[in-house]
Length: 383
Image (cartoon, rainbow, N blue to C red; front, top):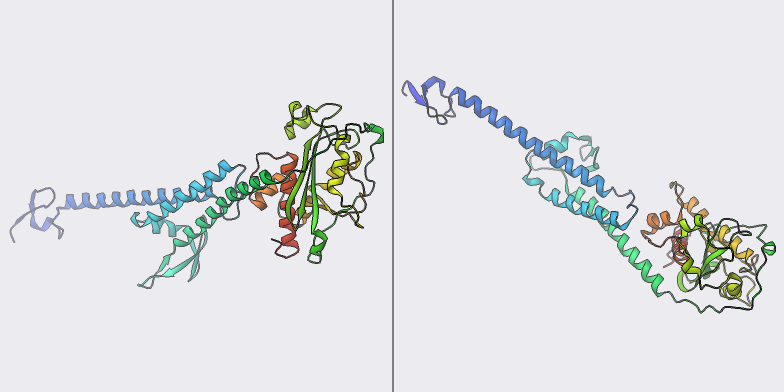
């Protein structure tokens, strides 16, 4: 060995004892260490950026119990986030130090599982060398399950609109000779009870029922008017036919009500007055020749029934049972804080409606919600 040796990096001749086993001089060796440290820091930053991106997509997609959003556009964005999440997970083997970054956010529960603050509990799997490997396939399974639930929203929404579109409407016969009902002659029901649904409720009581919904110019059944009225006949929990029409108010539309139901002057211009179709509506929701008329279902059913009673659309009011999906929802979904029909159809049925407060749409949504609640509370397969 000579007195001098050449550095394999910078090429300079140095005293042999100053050249390390790696063939580098002390200056180049120090530079190599610095470069490797910078590379490791860069790779760790890249891994951290991937981790943060995964967390962002996870939150954007929502966990298995979060809301789907307020519109189908939001649902579509969440599905896109799910797809991005899976694509990113599949690239993880290429990301150096990712498992190190991920593990830094985990606390070991036992030898078979750990908990990550962002992704929750995860099972672990033993590696051949006896160490514990994180099972990222579980994250894919979770996000794929979420994606299926989101896709269900499109399927359920399309199904709802198809049912509404194909539902047969009964012919409405106007009685143009009907006398106008004086306001002072309007009467509501002084006593009004609704029924509960339990495991003891016999299915035969609900073989046939009617779901009703009215849109009105206000909240008072004796001073305000019905401007849209709908009822759907359900047989064995399936909608079979419907009655639906706009109703022309004698006192005109009210701006405050229009903000909610979006019913315009054009909608009611050629519509019948309520007394002209009261008899036809009554015939539809009543079954003659039986001891009791079929049950009536509604969301906040007292509101609809009081308007029907005040406008002579509900003869035999005391000879039938009433079921309120608002009250039933409060019993069954007591962990919710909102019980509006549109919210419940999204949350419970995965149905997103653009026509909420259309009485036919509301009646159909109420009927399907009632079916869902009965299935749960009766612990029965009613499909």
